[in-house]
Image (cartoon, rainbow, N blue to C red; front, side, top):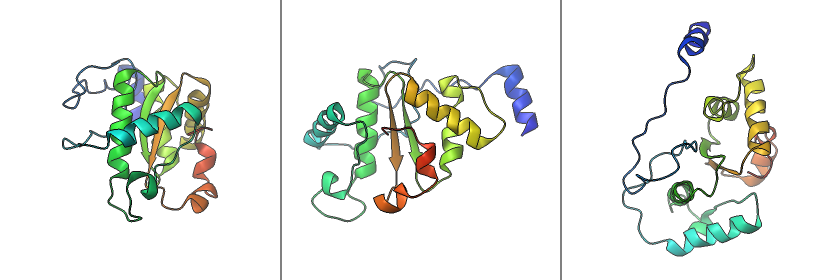
Length: 171
């Protein structure tokens, strides 16, 4: 860890890849984006994307569940693809000038948030949790941003985890 910090202090964070997915070659390159590549075969669902946009005009926290994404209550209906497509389209339009970010609820939320520090010009703290807290403060106080949290299976259980205290309000 110290070797990495020394290297980063000398060289700075690595440049994010400028290679953009097909269909998203134009966009605000100065706006951070950690979304996975969108699916190459995303078709239809225009109404659902428009509905997401309308909902974000009224709310700062929004969940895309099975009922929103499709007419059946099972996994595999494309919630993640829909959220990623919405994120890429929002990034391309410049809707979230603070950045568009992706984390997964099945991973270490603190570590994933801490990894965003360099993209947000947030100084690293002495621990991952403190760095994550700094990232949270930046996301809450900076320009509007989108934080996609994938694989939140049970809203009630999620609300009672430590991870929710690390996440910015309104995400």
